[in-house]
Image 1 (cartoon, protein in one colour):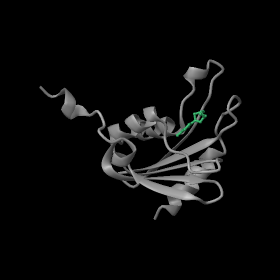
Image 2 (image 1 turned 90 degrees about the horizontal axis):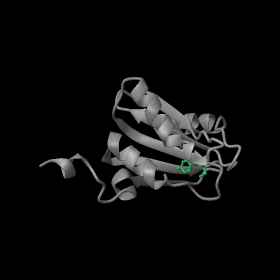
Image 3 (image 1 turned 45 degrees about the vertical axis):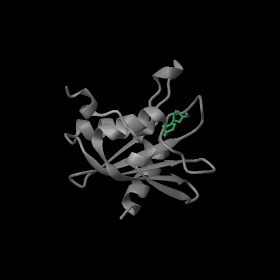
Length: 131
Ligand code: THU
C-alpha cells in the first residue's frame, strides 16, 4: 500500500536540486482522490529561498486541484529517517487530518511511521481563529 508512495518519493528524491547542502529529500503525498503528488527540495544561492520536498509536493497537489491528502512519505539519503522540519509540519497540517500516516525513510530501507498529530501536537489551526 505504501510501496507506491515509496517508489515515487525515491524517484523524485534523485531530482532534488541541492548544490549547497548536498542533502536530497523526496516527498510523496496520496491525495484523497488516490492520485500521488511528489516534490523534492530545491535550494537557492540565497539560502532562505530554498524550498523543502514536502512544500513541493503540497504545491503540486494544490496545483492539480486537490486540497487533502491521506498519506505521506518522506525519504532522504540520511543515516536515520528524516522528520519533516517544523515549517513543513505546519504546512502538512493544513492539508492532512491528525491521523494521517507520515512515513519517514532512508534510502537503505529504514522506516519510521508517525501520525501528523504526533509530529505537530497542539497544532495551530482554524479553530484558534474562530471568535
Ligand atoms: N529538507 C527537506 O526538504 N525536507 C525535510 O523534511 C528536511 C529538510 C531539505 C531542506 C534543505 O534543502 C536540505 O534538506 C537541508 O536542510
